[in-house]
Length: 83
Image 1 (cartoon, rainbow, N blue to C red):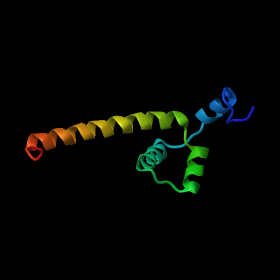
Image 2 (cartoon, helix red, strand yellow; image 1 turned 30 degrees about the vertical axis):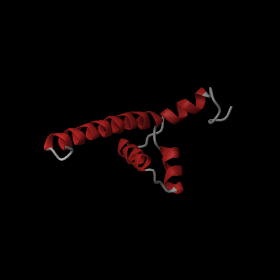
Image 3 (cartoon, helix red, strand yellow; image 1 turned 120 degrees about the vertical axis):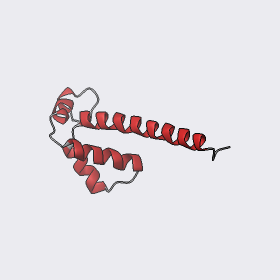
Image 4 (cartoon, rainbow, N blue to C red; image 1 turned 45 degrees about the vertical axis):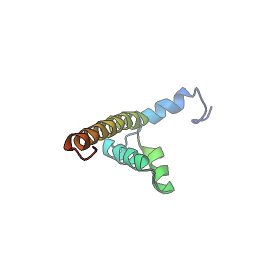
């Protein structure tokens, strides 16, 4: 079975052992939120970063984004500009 086939536990184990830094993962997630990434950088990320780090960084970035939007809306409404 190849690493990309569904149900391949060997590929998942190998991916989870990758030693990419969490900072590299955060940068990759930030670029994905922005929607722009060079294909060479993407290929390097796929080869080096840990998928578990991607999940954690993505959830944290999503929470930070939502909290930021809520705080921005509360600030705008509280300032009276939105009336």
